[in-house]
Image (spheres, rainbow, N blue to C red):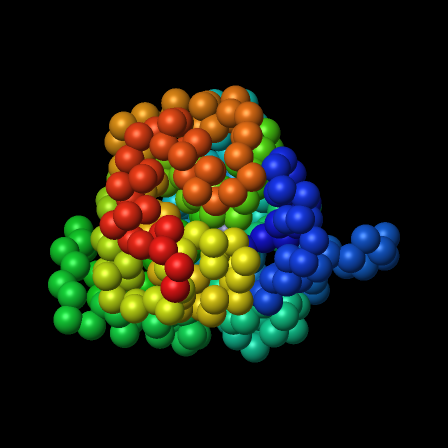
Length: 302
Ligand SMILES: [Zn+2]
């Protein structure tokens, strides 16, 4: 989740208004307001220097290192493939410190800035992780190193952080977004593209967990219209369901088109004004969106 109100540019002007984003800080324009990076710096955390400056709460050096390693190639990667350069820092923060710097509920990764900083929860002691752990009960995931469910959930949460980074790259790349679900879809696509090319084992875990969430979370809202109108106000669980469903389609499109999809999306001029219209436009960019919408009841009224 990000401060999206100025990111949704084309199409419906109403989108600029009324974006009540529960979990999102409204970044102040006051020149003297500290940036998130400054707030993190004031926590006096230890750091790992390197390609990506990484801050970590006591006891979480190892997980900070592994997340940092997963992202270390990303700046070069996005520059090479999309000709965009964005630098960022990373912070792995425990709940006590988290609440000192943000109103975003502990457990929901976010990217703030510029200067960009990706903030991730240090442990799975939070609502989102608990929802995912519960959904995974009774499911057996076969991972390379026989990871525990908790380890898988921690990794999955970091991957959501990559999705947040995907928003920054999608914006820098110059894609215009007509609505919220395409905005979210593109962010996941950027993150998935990077992982598939660099850490396919991790993108598989992301996908496997997403499939479980799409199956288990029993959403109250399934329509793209509701997502458009309510966005994060559908609640954490239902929001996670939507994101999992977007992920399912990202994988299919990636397999058909890879990078070309993003190039097409960038060039595309939106002409519809309705959510079914946008779905048809996406279908024209990459066929399969209509079937996907049917499978997950995305066009039905709840
Ligand atoms: Zn997002």
